[in-house]
Every structure is written in structure tokens, then in C-alpha cells.
Image 1 (tube, rainbow, N blue to C red):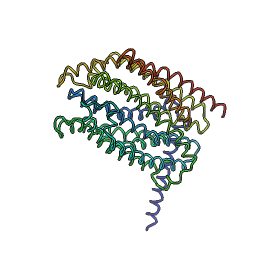
Image 2 (cartoon, helix red, strand yellow):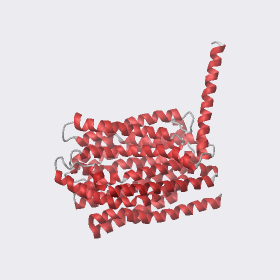
Image 3 (cartoon, rainbow, N blue to C red):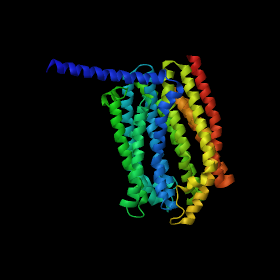
Image 4 (cartoon, one colour):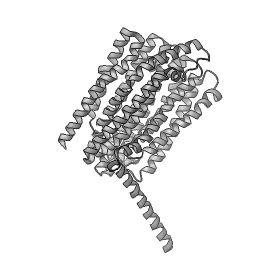
Length: 484
């Protein structure tokens, strides 16, 4: 080999090393030095985009199914929404738990241990996804009946569940976990792009499978196939991005790293991951209760609540994106001892979320009817049922959208507690919020005020839970300040 060739290789290696150092420095500056609004924008905007695009998965399915004008197909997708949301809960176990721990280890300059956490999280997500798929496949009909499927909706619900959950849940859970880990190491844009690509593909494939490839009457199967393929594609890209980022971030896919994780780090992971999963899981339990109470009125009320629960996820997605963007900054600065910057990030994220919530309330109050009408055609078959469903949905939306600001307080407090590793209070908040307040209120208000009382339970329950959440967060931050 010539000296010139050797020199060229050495220069190339040096350039690569300099590039890695520059990338690492930029992430360090983002967490430590950049102004809080700029840092939140850098971390939060890609995350908000990915949340909104991820929301498209279900909204697009509902939109195109709504073009059929079939309220029973819409009711079936409402039932299965709980199962798809469990993907988020399961991904939180290793994605939020592992991601929060990695961000704290980065703040302590312990990147080698962060790599072990990431490898362990990937293995855990894979195993969890496979178990969920097998159990759902074995007990599909009783599960769907329990969730509120009727004789008129059970076949549609089975079609959707087979492809999206039984076949497609493992890549979905793995992809969401990869996105969490990328985001918490400062690679928010890559995580956003991976989830966004899946959402865009879903928008393209939905009408193709529903109205071109498959025959009439198989629209739910077409939507499910499109979602499954999109999840698989998104997971593939996120694996590619994760592998590339592992050269400059504490990320790893190596089995040896997963086996080498210390017991204390496993404990820290689950201390945050389990409450994060339970938080989303209890949200799903509350959704099950809404579905069962709505179905007890009739399938059209269930379909109307299904539309509303998709629309109201838009402000939720933005606010969760803000909180997820905040989380690595809070975790890093908490671990590094820069508590002033940590508190500034907490306050700024809360303010931004409240502004978003206020704007969304105004828009949804003004445009409730046209927004809900987007999800169900009133000029196709069963037009009378469709018009009744849309009218109910608009009324429910005007009540439930009032919950947006207090929901933000609950999400924000929970993410802040997770960022500082306080799993105990996260779990306490989740249980009190859903089991102690919202679900009992749901049954009480439905009993005395009917379906509108059921709609009003959300803002009432979230408001009471927000007061408790603020107290928990303030107490936890004061305790950390005293310990510092």
C-alpha cells in the first residue's frame, strides 16, 4: 500500500473522528448551553411532527372508513383503538424507561452504560411485542367482546385486529421503542422522520387497499393491511437510523451489551418504565369503560365517541410532543446537577402546552360539526345513521375539548416526574387520575346525566387530577432541591 494511500486513509479517519466529536459537542451544547426555548424547539418540533404523523395512522383509517358511511365499521375501529393504544403502553415500558435512564447516564458522562441500557431495551420490546401478538391471536373474540364489540361490529373488529395487532404489533412496538431511544439521545429528527414515513405511507396505501385492490365490504381489512405495512416500513427505517446513530450516541443492538446490564440499571429502567406503561395502560382502561358505557346506549353513540376520541388526540399529540421534547433536557440537567436549567425547561414546556391547549379549544368549539363530519360521510349508504352519529359527535366534542389544558398539566407533570427518575409518584398519579377520579366520575355522570354526562366526565376528571399532579410535581422538585 502506498504512503499516499495510507495518508489518505488516516486523514479520512481523522475527518470521521472530528465529525463525531462535532456531533457529540452539538448534542452536549443542546442539553447544556442553548437557550431553553431554542432547545425545546430543536427537540420538541420534530417530536410534535412525529406525534401528529403517528396519529395519522388511526385518523386516516377512520377517515377512509368514514367514506363508506358505515357507522358499524366506525364503531369497530373504535373498539380496536384500545388494542392499538396498548402498543404505545408497551413501547413506553422500555422506550420511556430506557430512554430516560440513558439521558441521565449521558448527563453523568457514562455512555458505555447507556449502550447496555439501549440494547436491553430493544430485546425487551421484541419479547413483549411477540407475547402480546400471541395472546391477542389466541383470545381475539372474547377480548373484542369485552371491549364492546356487538354482533354488528365483531367481524369488522376481527379483520382489523388480525393484521394490525396479531401480525403487526411486534414491529409497531419495536419501532416506537427505537424512536424513544433515539429521541432521548438527542436524535429527535431521525425519530420523527421514521414515524412520519410510516404515516405518509399509510395515507397512500389506505385508499389503494380499501377502494382499489380489495372488493367492496372489505374496507376495514384494507385499512388494516395498509397500517400493518406502514408500521413494518417505519420500523425498518428506525432500525437503520438507530444503527447509524450508534456510532456517535450511547446506542447499541449488540446482544452482549444487553446481557451486561447491571441490576441497578435494570431497576432504574423499570422504576420509570413500568409507571409510564401503566399510565398509558390505564388510559386504555378508561377508554374501554367509555366504549362499554357508550355501547350500552347504542352503536351510533359508540361510533360518535370513536370520532371524538380521534379528534381530541390532536391537541394531545402536540402536548405530548412538547413534553417528550422536554424530557431529555430535564433528565440530562437533573443528572448533571444544573437544576436551574432543569426548572426553566419544566416551566417553559408547561407554558407552551397551555397556549396550544387554549388555541385548540377555540378552534374545536367553533368548528366541531365540520371537523366531525370529516370522519363520516352523510351522503353515502345509511345516511340517516351517519347524520345522527355526526350530530352526537359534534356535541360530545364541544364538551370533551375543554379538557385540553388540564390534560396538558397531567401529561407534563408525569413526564417531568419520569425525567427525574421518580417512578413512584408517576405510578401514584396514574392510579389516582384514572382509577380514583376519572373512571368513577364516568359511571356516576353517565348514570345521572346520560351520554352527555359521559362526555363531561373527561374535563371534570382531568381537572381534579391536574390539581393532584401539580402538588406531586412541586413536592418532588422541592425534595430534589433539598437533597442537592
